[in-house]
Length: 298
Image (cartoon, rainbow, N blue to C red):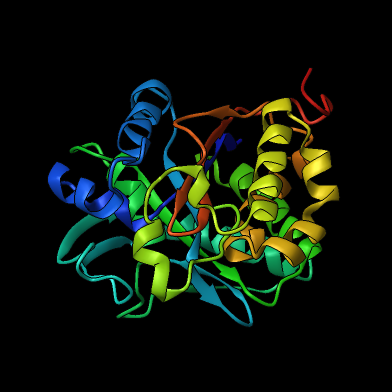
């Protein structure tokens, strides 16, 4: 039987793809992100030697309207330039094996439960930097794991996202795959206005756009550290309404749904620090699975 062997909430900010130290400092000033070290640390200490087959990535830079869309290509291959910020990510060549069989099972389980999901292997289906940036760090070298990218569904509310996560778990169990599920995106997500945004590009949390959003992010992260995923879900609606989290927080909600609505998620282990990225809140948390009957971590 297949298994989701870990969950990972991970930033995918474009600055991850600035590789020149001088360019990093020119963009972020004296407070350069810790994520250049944190993502490789996740790979070295958690992923490199872990026994698993496939990364399933909930990509908050891929938005759909009527269905969750699953990239069902046999291979994710191409050259990527960001249409949002091409000077930061451009002409990036990528090549990963896909997982169309698992995609089909997830769509089937979603539809069986009354949800809405579609596989797509159409030519020209884009792969977004919410997938590519994290795979650059978490899936390096010649031994590439399979990659299954999935959209966030902008019209899905909290319950629909949780049910979709449950469908992912059932499909993984049927598939025989061992999966790492990545919630790719940020926490609060409010950019600074153009007149000041370049002056607020440091990674220092003081450059989060709004004290209320920063306090909410800190509250969410403390619940993750405590393993109190029930509290996160109880407050998810208020968080979504007041802090405009990236992807309407769908990436975390789907992750929680896949782990028995958070009851089978461990305390979160943080890599790097909590940071700002032109106003938005960013962090990396690793979650190990718990038995579904364990409830909140102790």
